[in-house]
Image 1 (cartoon, one colour):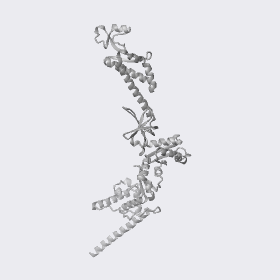
Image 2 (cartoon, rainbow, N blue to C red):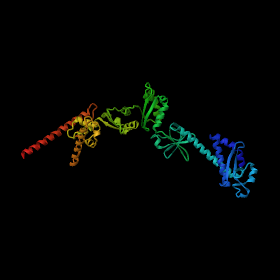
Image 3 (cartoon, rainbow, N blue to C red):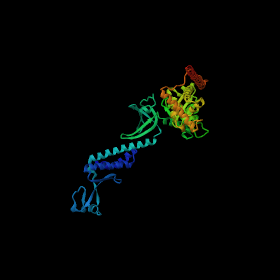
Image 4 (cartoon, rainbow, N blue to C red):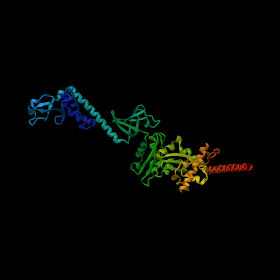
Length: 476
């Protein structure tokens, strides 16, 4: 049986290579390795045996190598051969040479042939896995389509033809349900080589899937005229994508929307109704953030470049629109821009400004204009002023002089020590009953007016206190 196998070996190698699409040399190497293992299993590992494939005969040839020694020193026939016998096999043999002696491969028998077959099959499987891994590794970052087969531990198993892919629960669009046999599309996000073969992870929730869909649907993106700068998604609910054009004649948003919304609508349908905001990208972060928060109107934006934070003030009637349902709009805008975003209404911002100015005016000699300059320079309380360095205070308009900066810090520290030593709470700006916000209301003016009224009241109280103290002295 072994003879038959080896006589047909060449045909088998060709057939397996053709059927499996595997390089012929890979199969030949597998056959050689299998026969070598079988030979060593039968004859022992201490014997030096080598195997090779004879292209002409289509057979595996086994050679046993022995050391040529003098007849008088000959001991072990397994690894040694006397010189006189070696000369019969090879007239050019010399002492200490290693001479190869052809072995009869048919002696290996049925077990040897079966061992070789198992090695071949394993090698074929390994080669198939390697081919599949390389194929999908090169396709990583593309969109693939297949048939949903089953669900394993919440993951959808997708038949891609030559192999299967998995869509884990975290990569699925919430609420989507697929039945076996349904066609499903996804983004090839990860390809891993495991002991059980290549593992392919597909995603329908990845931002890159959204970007790839736009690339497929919008020719201007595919051609590189329009560029996708960023994308943010809450899968199945809403997404934002930022685009810019390299050609001033091409409107990037219009290109992505398409005629009567045809292009973006195709993508929305593929994502099961996910709403998509297409945002014009701008290198100016304040303008980009305003675009990202659309359709909400923006009043003012304050930025902290060091911490990449934005504070955005919106009209009171735009607050809920800017924040979005359960914070969705501002959350996506923050993800799209890469900056932390805080949203404040006009009235809340004005109230906070009034509170800060009231607090800063507790510093002796402080007036409202100076307090506003300090607040606008990033110091919201006299405590912050007390803890600041002279260099930081000197950035405030009116305090560029080191002496003035030092005096401001000293005055702030004195106020802080006074309240701490007396154990008194630091007073806060008086508040009035909150009124419904009106679009035309100037909230800051109202806050300033309230602050002025309260300051006049405090001054009147101080004067009354001083007059009372003077009267006591006259009585005494």
